[in-house]
Length: 69
Image (cartoon, rainbow, N blue to C red):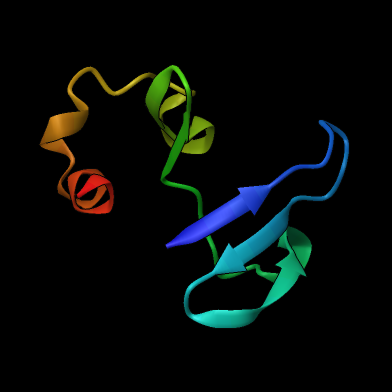
């Protein structure tokens, strides 16, 4: 799992990854591709793939359910 942190909207995102102990800027992690994003309003498909469309039933996403358990 990867967590991206943005200090502000124009900053380079920082990447926290359970497979890499170093926190690196996203521009140094070119192998990563966004699939989902989430906030207090719910789970969305990545903007690159589905233009930020909200997942209508997040319970159907098994990886998301495993994270929540």
